[in-house]
Amino acid sequence: MPIVVIGLSHHSSPIALRERFAFAQTDVPASLQLLRDSGVAEEAVILSTCNRVEIYASTSSEFRPACDALKEFLLTCHGYRDPLTDEIYALNEPQSVQHLFKVACGLDSMVLGETEVLGQLKSAYDIALQHGHTGSRLNKAFQKAFNVAKQIRTETKIQRGSISVGSVAVELAEKIFSTLSEREVLVIGAGDTSEKTARALLSRGARSIIVSNRSYDKALALAAELSGRAVLFEDWAKEFPKIDIVISSTSAPHHVLDRAKLEPLMKLRRNRPLLLIDIAVPRDIDPAVNFMENVFLYNIDDLQTIADDYLKQRKEEIARCEQIIREKTEALLGQRGSQGDTRIRPAFGHE
Amino acid sequence: MDWFTGQSADRHFFLLAVAVYGLSTVYSVFLWRKGFREDNRANYFLLLLAFALQTASMALRGFRLNHCPVSNLYEATIFAAWTIVTVYLVVGVWPRLRFLGAFASPVLFCMGVFALMPGLDRPHNAGAEPVGVWTSLHAALLSLAYGAFGLSSVAALMYLTQERNLKFHKLKAVFSLMPPIQRLEAIVGRLLLAGFILMTIGLAIGGYDLFRLDHPDAHRGDPKVIWSVLVWLIYLSLVVMRWKFSQRGRRFALGAIGTFVFVLLTFWGVNLLSPIHNQ
Image (cartoon, rainbow over all chains, first blue to last red; front, side, top):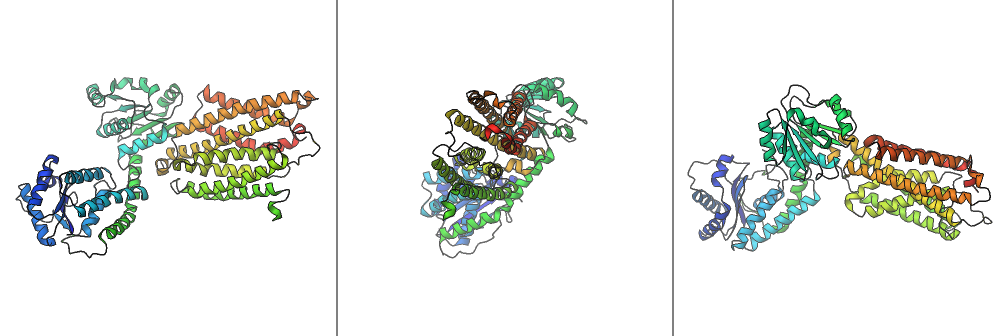
């Protein structure tokens, strides 16, 4: 009984289609029961996340009839009757097992190497296991997938580094300050990216957030969302002695902070390190301040470059990861030959 | 083999240790270039080997002299280097801190080369009076002080490396295993303060020891005494600047490194010129 996988992901379909096939977590046990009752699958796991809906099944049927039956189940289950081209893919062994391993490792994710999908996969497997919808084949395959994910995490750099601007800013802060729990963050200008960056810092333990914006109402609203405090735009400099990190994203056409303004403020701060994150275009902070001692200035391009470098590094690790996955798949399946499959897609990386 | 059993066997062991420190220094250049992400185990084992050779060297001399070998400049220097490598090997047990070896190796190699310079290892006079407790304590405390200053300069070097990477927006800054620069700066400050306190006590004991001699005025005009006071004043100024005037960051790190380099470069010559340290 080979393992087959059928489904659709961010590689093959837009969100408008994926959301129509999504399973609510509470409906999964009943759907699994329905699938097994149909006789097409002896064992099954349904994985439904924002980026993919997939059915992993162990079946005694031939591959093509099994795929047709699984596809029909998927369509019927969601009452979908619109025409489809190649949005739904189906894989047979060994590609199906390799695909499972890639999903577990984050190689098939939209954000290459992300780890959230592993938790979602474990959760999907647990539901199937608890309701008795898995047997020896899927149990072994999923356990192996979790082991491979762990091995790849420790032996390769696929999950190393941050690949979003907000998390790069957090990493920089962690390379400058002993601990983030003592740090106060000043957000100048209530933009979307500055909000995300501030949230990322808060999630890593930053002590408090102060928001300053030309529109005081917007500052109040963002401060409320971040459980912080709003100050008038004219008064942000007064807060500086206790500030450690500044995120600036105003729409001012000139520099909001320059060397002449910062030098006396640094004395008030007793020369403690200061991280300035300038995500405004045009820039809010004069680049010359980076020449000041204990001041570290990063603009949006600097952050994006670091994020891109990390992504490049992750991509360079794909070959190593695939090699590990191939070896582990062979070990799991032994020398058993694979059946044909309808369509093999690379199933990893960014689209 | 006579090379390892004769009178100079301990120096030969130390020579080998310095050679291994040199190898480790070369390997450290590779680690620096790779942003400290490469496997540091090889460097750790190189330093462990050097430590074993150096410990053997010190043990051989200690057994031969029948006391702790800190009675001349050579011995004091290798004792200070030994404290540095011992601290590294302990903290290097944690893989995340193993990269520190890349910074410690060059310092240990320089100290080793310095110790091997001619004239530093003055032979122990068989007829001379045994080294007193106060003199031993004076030498041991100052060795520990210079060990702390050495480690402080290692941490300062790490600070400058990481600070430069952060300033120039290098990927290495976020990629490396180095601690945050604020923590590094605190380590530099604390080690420097610890070294300063040890030096102060060591010098005070040295002064008391001189006072007990038959010629208590012998220290007047002695180059080593003047030099020691000068070094003590430089470290005092660094401590005051750091804690009184918030002189942090790059300048403080440069001060810690510069002062230690000054000590390394001048210690030997000044010691040779000092009659009371060459008796």
